Image 1: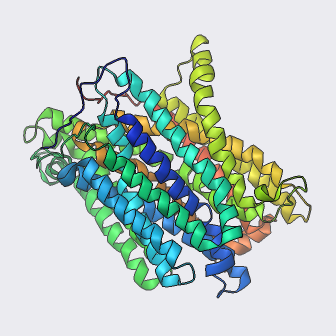
Image 2: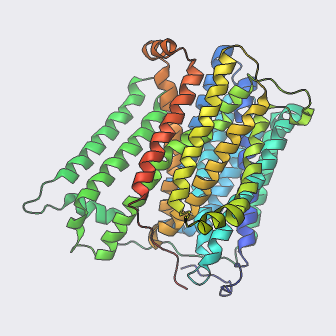
Image 3: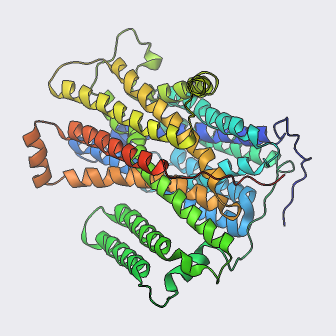
Length: 526
């Protein structure tokens, strides 16, 4: 069992090990965003030159969102390994080394599709493996005695993420243009190695919460009992729903054999259908596990299932958010660049730096100005209320870019600077949803499932990107395109307004569910 060498935390002070974790996160985020933010333009201008010019943008978008699906799918594996076998620190360290190797592949194989795509797979595996663990590793450093400081650190954690993203968004497009892909992808690789080193240096100061031992009353065992136990006089509706979910998952997997280009969509759809069917079925029959398992274990499973509903309702937000690095860049390429912009700041992909810059401003503004003002007026901005509002703001951002697309499609010039408005709206939504969601996910998770719950939080981003792939695939047939043409909209404009409506419906459902959700407190005892 691993223990900490750190002194007991002073309730008035931040734990002294926090700077190591924050420093690690800042370097890792520079590495990730530095690579991610130049991926779409690099694919279009270099790696996909073998395709017809008209197909390159669509294929680049498909590759980008497939990669993002992998990044947010592998947290399931990382969370499971950490919670059950290796602990958070060891899992983060080992996956970071895989992550660094993947970054190296991008730098060494920019002209080789096999080598480059292998690098993307390794990055998705490594980045995804550590993604659910670093935030929960932060939470492990706090107890009930100093948990009031945790929100400050989670905000600082999110601030440093965007600090790294800001400079990555500014500098990497310049390095790609001036020095080529080997340098542009090599710098993020070096930063990832530094991130791993910083984490390792602080190893003797961390609170190391050991992995949970095999537990007969674990989440999976309680769910299995609920689904398999028959009770006289009661039906088996929950079991039927679970079986249906499994069958639909198998059917989804079969798509990869019958439809070209459906491997990623098929696998992710199968996971979602399986989890939905088994989780929904278990919810209906959960009381059948009482008597076999302690009430606390059964109540814990019900709490987790309630959390997963919250996560599911956030997935449309991620559909909109991640497209700023694909769809919005493609739109920016169609807009006019003002002559007064300096040459080091005149690329559409660099508009992404607005996102982290605004986040760094909005987090302290919200905490020091907006939220206190709302409380003075008698309105408590709870986590779920903030998240509901954030989804609405993301929809407003997409109404804005959809309106711009109408102007572009009409043949009228429009300045790239108009994208400042949707970036501001989307970033405000991000702060309300994502920064809030990190702490919400940790605080609501039972102690034995911190890593896995954080994995499900990130799995929501996989589902969000899955909606993007499904939507893009769905419109690429004659029937749907014919219907879109009859509306007078281009494919791009139609999808922009579609996603805006999708988010507004999600916000409505989220707000209604949030009114009945009772928040809990699952920080460690002092």
